[in-house]
Length: 160
Ligand code: PNS
Image (cartoon, rainbow, N blue to C red; front, side):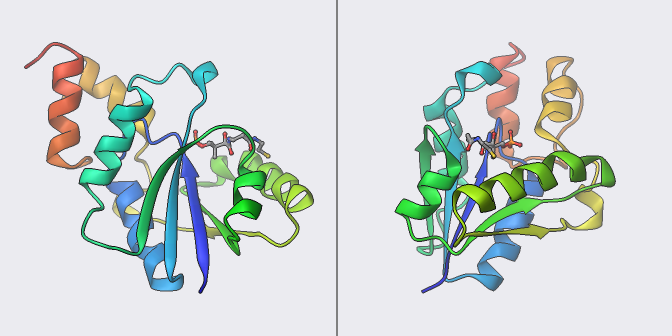
């Protein structure tokens, strides 16, 4: 049983994340989508809201588990016997930070490899931060996030 962890802030989940989840399921038997509880990042959505949005859009597969995690990702990977951590690489600008994190996680959890997956080209410029920026001014985000997330963002910014 090959288990991979897909960690992130998912604030909120986008079509780019969903694309990566789909690709991850082609490679691994089980995916644990681990939503980071990191109050320092001051997320727009609470832990429960982020969890609800990820769950609602990934329910179809019983090979997926969605959870909130606190503390070190490397510890979670060891506890859950994960052979891989999945991260998305959109552009060269992602590389430096991701490379550093991958090597540090390998040092902390040597049995877990970080695997980088490239999203579908049309999502390479997509990020949760940009989506929030656009949604804040009631811009059109319909092509970038699931319908439920679009609605939640509109509610959050007072447009519904
Ligand atoms: O979606 P993000 O914000 O790019 O995800 C970053 C995340 C959550 C994967 C990263 O911040 C993380 O792993 N946090 C948990 C704490 C930790 O393990 N830090 C050391 C990383 S080497």
